[in-house]
Length: 285
Length: 291
Image (cartoon, rainbow over all chains, first blue to last red; front, side):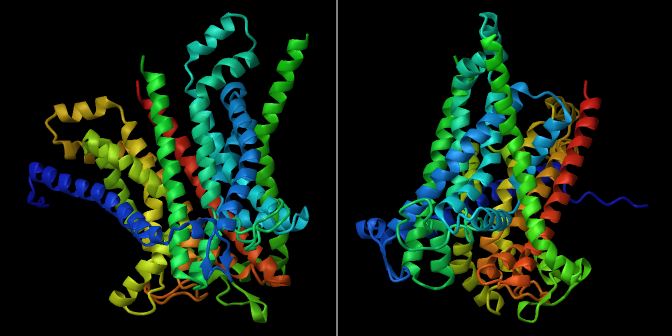
């Protein structure tokens, strides 16, 4: 066999790959700037007091998106008050009490599965379980509870990681002073892990705010402000989907998209700030 | 005594919260199967999965075109996303200077956080007309959907691959460099092979994300329930099938959409089992072999 002549020397290969790797890195940044830039460039000019705080006219051809902002707030709130205790308490158990049993493995596999189930399947479940079986109807409650199920694994995982990251010496100190296990967790471990737990809750919140498929057939699509948790509603992503696919109003679709993008940007920046502060606190001093 | 009771009670409450994940998953699987089973039974499971025709008005339900659509879009997206993500991960883990990393990390995070309906909207307004002008047809196609999916799965594969590359012991790298290998040779022949199981896990999670995506795909793929003749023709994903028709489905049609959900669930569970197997193998080989 004749071996292939070496066309490119290792040092040339190094140079070529450096260019390729830099290119890919820059490409990711360019893609983000194009998408966000395009939405904000077209969406921000739609902003006005009337757009943010007004009611939609007709089916959203003109007018504002206030009911959609309120709807988003309601469903996200319901999702979080249900998912936060479940996620955080489960995380405490997994991090502090669980050993290596079949039950623990089953819980982890269940949480993992929950995190990877397609959102439309959550939507199907919400429809048959909350809307039909529990007779909650198309409502803020049905939508919010469906979103809660999706937020649980996000909150659980982030909270568990941050509880596990609390230094062993903190716990030993507390236990040596005669505190019980739960007192140690409650007074020492959780306060130390709070920034991480907060990050998890914010990430769960982001998941609830951006989700569309899971609420498509659980929350209804009413244009009015929901007066109670039993009323149907129309959160922002659903409104955007309807505006865009049914060709109702392009300017209002741009505006709605820009509001959503701004919310997500604020969330990303604040979680990054929290994480940075947290790592400094844990590593530094 | 009181203290012991408190400790006992707390542990049980925490355990209950932990078990809720299992209860929820069982409820989801149970209810979706219960609603989907009548359609599977009436059509026949094989006819349902391999049937080529989906016409609810004649009560004919075969989801094979949608399975092809979902898998096809996923495969195309991976062809684009895997090399990009791996190069991106290598860049972040090995090459990028600190400033660049401080910009790129939040960029990837933000890309992961953008709502899927925004990706769909961007695709509908920008990418579909672009494809129509440059590739002909309506612009709604499998290819258009996979380009959007590429951007959506990129952060998943990239960040998991980066973690895998970073977790390789420094000694491996030092040994290779000490033997006179260039940095790229070290990456290619030492670091990358050692990180491969982790990277594969990332790719599988990306597959799951691509198969499960609904809104972005629905808005750009065209959604005709026929096996596309080429990647430039429209196709329908399993997820879109549910989302498009649930609004007006009655009777057997309603059940058939839940049965579509069963097919989706089965695909995701297969992917999860494969990832767990890889992780298990990795722990055994790496954990046993290293000091």
